[in-house]
Image 1 (tube, rainbow, N blue to C red):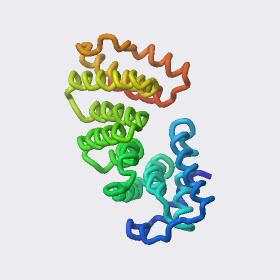
Image 2: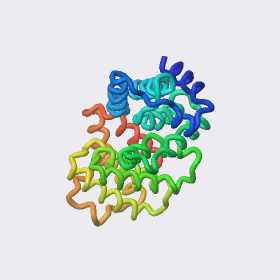
Image 3: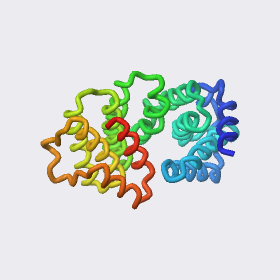
Image 4: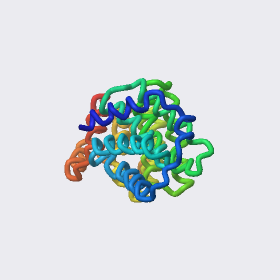
Length: 253
């Protein structure tokens, strides 16, 4: 069902441009507008817990926009749909085009920072890594982190902090410096009680420590965990996101 919906929505969006979307009549039906806001929240909630539901929701949001008028949350729907095209139907070229289309709405948008903090996860580390130079990904993630701190979106800002560490791990040979970056973000995650993403960042730190054979001077008091301890934590909390990164990083070790 999800694959059919994503594929069908992709066909509808095939020739859609920014100008086309801006020239759509605005959605005025209050019940539909409320439904779109709820679907936007649903995308946030299901992104990790039930990702297929998130992909389905983004496809339905964009169909609503084409049928009943453009609405602000459609930009977020485009970003989510770019990720769906990568993970559901493997339409990588179209995923990149939709991701770029979503980004084209950022500058001047009244919710620019609130959107920018969500884009690194939805666009830059999914479709973006297939088309952009790897070294550009951490820059997008840092910009997202800063935007999140500006608007007080701590959860997504800390996610961007993790993505800074992850993308630098894949694009930089300076592992000792990356350990320091991990420590700085881990301290912020502890401060803001973002323990799930903190454990994923600890995973990157532990991988760097294993590869360099050294702990970082700034790691004292952080409660650094071993990979074995992180696996136990992931299993106890049913954190598939953490488990994915543990086994991915173990391949490098």
